[in-house]
Image 1 (cartoon, rainbow, N blue to C red):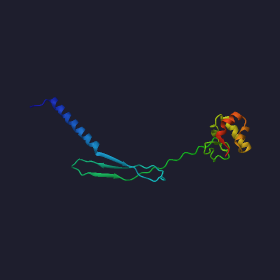
Image 2: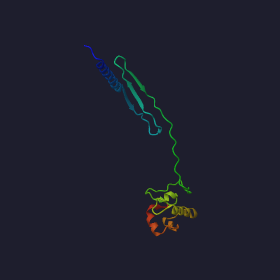
Image 3: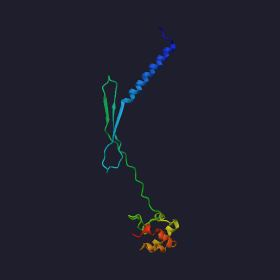
Image 4: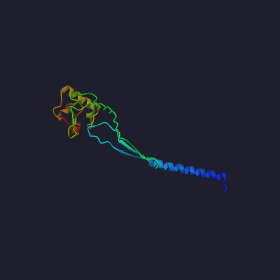
Amino acid sequence: MRLRRFELVIISVTLAFACFMGGYFIGRSAGSVSISPTVRSPSETQPTVPQVHMTNILPPTAPVQEMTTTESVTYPQAEQPPAVMPEQATPSATVSSRDAQGRININTASRSELMDLPGIGSSLSERIVDYRNANGPFRSIEEIRNVSGIGERRFEAIMDKITVG
């Protein structure tokens, strides 16, 4: 029985495809990788690369070799960005301007922090800071009514949101 040329080509292509697929599936199962993270104490802030353990599976005629990487690599820690400073520092800019209830301390707040109050814009916050710089710290929250532009209605809107210390 003699095969035609076309049949030989089809058989050759089929065998080549079968060999390729067999090699593909053997190669996929050959590289089993397990990643185990390195445990560090919370005081160590540098990121680390986890350890990688790889086992190479070779054909049955060759002995199995195991390759293990146990080194951990550390990278230099990125610099922390500088703290955000208010637009214009006040004499006590290092003191926190909010208390435990979230009220703003009008003696230490910056212009932008004062603008968080309802009805207080950039020009009014500037007048509050100017008044504080000229007359010293506020002794009571009612004293903020001495600032031009803060009347009874505006004071009632902010009185629960401000403190003097």
